[in-house]
Each structure stands twice: as structure tokens, then as C-alpha cells.
Length: 293
Image (cartoon, rainbow, N blue to C red; front, side, top):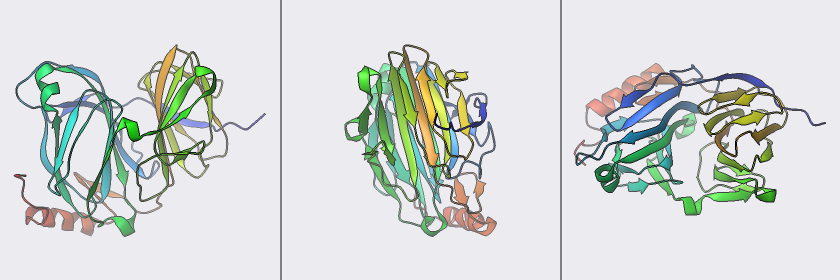
């Protein structure tokens, strides 16, 4: 029998709060559990569980704000969100799409409900993940990757038991479209008909799973439900996911740790306190650009 990868802990996110007036999120880390270095290169996970927004002529969201030193990854399950930044990038994502913004040396961006979605109202269901940049890429030029559902790579499970949608990295020989600055695998596992799948992540990768929909049995043992986050030990072994419900969905986050100091303050994530101070100085002196874009 193959060795199974053991579970270190499981937990739910912090109590939901609003970011701006458009995103009702539960923060899994660092607020729910401080995993700033333990789960490198992932440094923040905000989960906007399904939340209905009434129709509105006013666009809900978050106004222009700065970032430096990391990347924001927004994964949409329901609803539509629009993005603008002062590097000239603009995009709208809906169910199945992903937007991947590299803040790098510094960018101003804003995120809000897409115009028609705002007018119609509807269910918003999304994840925003912050991915740390290695020291040598902290000051890289900002960029934006719009990843549509049509471009996301899919691995089909046998017997119509579901599929794996690979956003970044490689799973079972299938490579995701996202360009990354360090090694990582990010993918959705969609199981149907009580399907089962065996995952093999490198033992040195920090690996965690968030249950999005339904219930899953992990490693033929414990059952985890919607909104549970499962963090695995850094040991060799397979991870067996089995859908207990008819349909289930989970996102897997797995990455090689950067093994570098992490200093996070507000919208900036750097390696030293002096770099954080410099980021604030640059922002306050207008080096990030103007807010009216």
C-alpha cells in the first residue's frame, strides 16, 4: 500500500468582513491562522463565500490602492468582477476565469463588480490569493495575466468521475497557463458521481486544500466539509480525495517555500522593515503614480 501524506491541521477562516463594499470575505490566513512563513509562497487567502448582492446602479468594490512585492490571484466561481490598474491593464472575469496580477515594484489597482452584474445583482463567489515573490523578483515590472476558463488546462478523470482544472504548474502531465516566479501548483478538483482521485505533490512543497463545495473524504479517513482548509505535513505520500457528496469541488494550493524573511505591512510584502518603509515613502511621494486612472 502506498504511503499517505499526513494532515498537520484543518481550520476554517476568520469571521467574514467586507473589503470595500463589494467583497464579503473570510480570511483564512494570515488572520484566521498565521501561516506567513509556514505556507510560503502563499501569504494570504481571502474567500468570498457565495453571497448575494442586490441590484445596484452604484458599482460596488474597492477603489484604487497600492501593492508591492507580491502577486494577487483572483479565481471566480460565480459573478463578475472588473479590474483596472495604472499600468494600463483592464479585465473582467466571470465563472471559471482567473486574473493574475504581478504587483512587483509597485502598482495601483482597483477591483469592482462588473457593470451589468452590478445592475442585475446576483451571487458573488470568489477567492483572492496573495502569492509572495522571491527577493530577486520583488521589484520586477508589474504585469497582468487574464486567464479565461477556455485557456485553463483540464485533466479528465476516468468513468466520468470529474476533472482537474490546472491554473498554474503541472498536474498529472497537464500544465496550467499561468506564468509564475517560483514553483507552484494551483488547481481546482471537481469530483462527480462520488469520484476519487489520487494526488502526488512534492514533499517539500507546502500543500493545502480548501473545500469549496460538497464534502470530501481525505486519505480514506476523515470527512471535510465546505469551508474547511486542510494543511498537510511536509512528508512524502499520496493524497486521496473522494467525494462523499454527489458533486464536490476543492482548490489545491501547493508551492515550493521561498525560505526568505517575510515582512508584511498593509498592502506591501517585502523582506525587510526598511523595504516596507521605502514602499510607503515611494507611494506617498507619488512614485506609484496617480490614483485617478
